[in-house]
Amino acid sequence: MNQQFTLPASELFALVNDAHDRTLQLVSDLADEQMTVPRMEVVNPFLWEIGHTAFFYDVFLLRVLGAGEFLLPGAANLYDSFKVDHDDRWGLPLPSRQETLAYKQRVLERVLDRLDSRRPDGAETYLYLLSTLHEDMHGEAFTYMRQTLEYPRPRSDHGFGDETGSPSGGGPLPGDVEIPGGMFKLGAAPDAPFAFDNEKWGHPVAVPAFKIARAPVTNAEFAEFVADRGYLSRELWSHQGWVWRVKAGVTHPVYWQRGADGWLRRHFDQMVLLEPHAPVVHANWFEAEAYCNWTGRRLPTEAEWEMAASAEPTPDGKSITGRKRRYPWGDEAPSAAHANLDSRRGGCIDVGALAAGDSAFGCRQMLGNVWEWTASSFYPFPGYVVDTPYREYSAPWFGYRKVLKGGAWATRSRLINNTYRNFFQPYRHDIFAGFRTCARPDDKLE
Image (cartoon, one colour):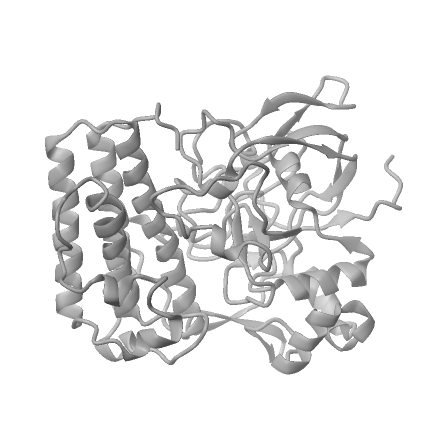
């Protein structure tokens, strides 16, 4: 953790309140029967998920700071995700909806009371940010759970989803940009305001010159792959990918459906016309890999993706400088002009929109809209040390998940930056994920 970085109590107060309010907004319109969900690998019972977000503050903030007993007796036996197996969460004696929300309110009040009486140092600031960003992650999970369960789009209180449609300057954005090779420092810098343990620390990697797409793959482009029997062409799929495809019985993206006038896509509980220039979303890593094989291209490595997002070219464009941007456009915090984040638009926008968010090399929407799969498996960086107190954040997942970068439309802007690493199993297509492609090494750079 960065022990030197602090935030005023007033800012932390606002962050905690905002995350709490957003969690409540994401479930407040659901009837009690909608809170009971089928047992599935990709969802949790809503009551468990709400209680877990409160428990995280209780155990990783209040307990660490010496606040005494849990604010709900037996909470660890209900909400500790590493003690309670996923499938067992449906059989727990969970408190009622009213009791769960009351527990969350008690935790909130205790957290805010502590902020009222103290001036947080660097260690405390870290714990408040860790707990808030954890709740933000679960807010995105609530959102894609609603998509999975065919529930209505989350309500739009307080600016969430108020802006609909694609902003001006939409449409496609074809073509590649060339990134010069060089030594690139992959990962977070020690002076970053906040970094998760798997981002630590920035370390030099040699990256050969490469070409990467200016924008993610669109629905129209992916529809050509579907039309060309891409899902049925065994030679395009890896062994694991083909096993998944056959077992799942898929012949197109999970939420696509044939309509009288072309493809439709289920967006929460509504069928909408497939938006041709929006990025393909809910594509898993296997589908991305097969599409790349069909086009004769490939997924970027994590280092390539981060280099395209954050490096700056020298004046002659033949190499990169030592400077690394926190966001593709620079170090200014994300705004609505830069990236489609914070559920502002309630879904994806055209890949050609938001030119103000371009990287130094001209890659667009590297933050927001859709998470982007990379070719890289999720492993620790050299010298990795488990962060305390949340020791289970990264270490249990190394080795068999794939790295995603960049965030999606439902990701909170305070969570995401160029070094943030997301990680999921390659078969997961419930998350808001798409991808962009790179030219293969045998395609000559100009």
